[in-house]
Length: 271
Image (cartoon, one colour):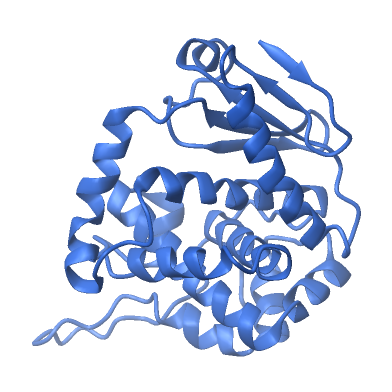
């Protein structure tokens, strides 16, 4: 292992992974420039690990980038030194139906995973700014918003690619598209990707139409609370009410049962 100190993105890298780690550090530093204008961001540690070093430190399966973040224990991003072929093939297989509908993707699966490290960085920033609610779909949506906003501000050449990935993922067909199911049920890879696509495309709409307005309101309201975050979101962005409702289960043809609209599942009492 090699340690590379840095005031904003310190690195720990497995042997042979330093060049990859520095490239990803540069990417994250650009995203930081886009977001640091709003509030201070503490150091976020980047761990670029081979499979052995990964297994010695975390229990997550090797491959998918992820974050482990806590204001008490620190902010950490984990990135594999190389994506395993089994993961790349799983992604390719999951994306086939979307590609058939929407056309060629804007890159290879590894490109998507590298770009999406910015989403994991946005989770760390949200924790630092006390915007994490511990409602999974809210936290994922807000991370996508922060990620897209940072790209739009600091890396506008990459923003269209991230948006195109989101549009492609949104073409998948979920097994259960409700926000409540996102909280309570394990997700197939295609379901996870579909939700990611929905959150990305809506975040892009907010960034393009409203800029940083949502972030400004969230920071004024921080720390966010699970019981009131729905009121806050629709108060800041009323259009989100209709978007949230679009995830409600739809009435099937021929069914006499009337499906109840979205009840802010997993968020708290909406009254």
